[in-house]
Length: 100
Image (cartoon, rainbow, N blue to C red; front, side, top):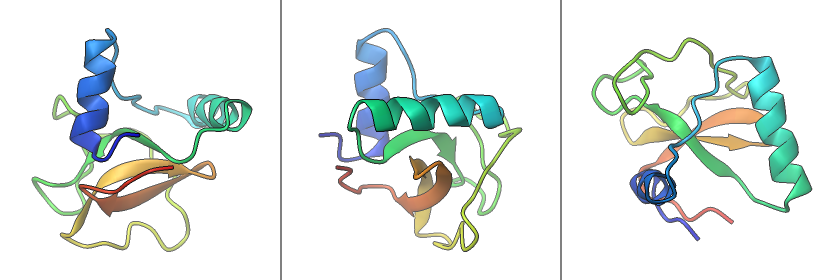
C-alpha cells in the first residue's frame, strides 16, 4: 500500500515508470478501466498544486493540460495538494493519505 504521492512516485520510478499524466478522456477512461479490472482502489496520478494554489502541474513542473475534477473538487485549499483518480474523477487530497 502506498501512503503518499511521493512514495507512489518513488515506487513507479523503481520499476522504470512514473505516475500517470492524464492528458485526455481516453487516457482517463483507460486508467479507470484498469483500476476496475484489477480491484485497485483510488490511485495517485501526476499532479500537484503545492507550489501555487490552483495551478496544477506535473512532477516535472509542466502545467496539466487536462483535468477532470469531480463537481466539488478541488476543495482542499492549501492543505490538499495531490491528485488521485477515484471513480474516474480527479480529487485533491492531503499529501499523505492511505489509498485502498
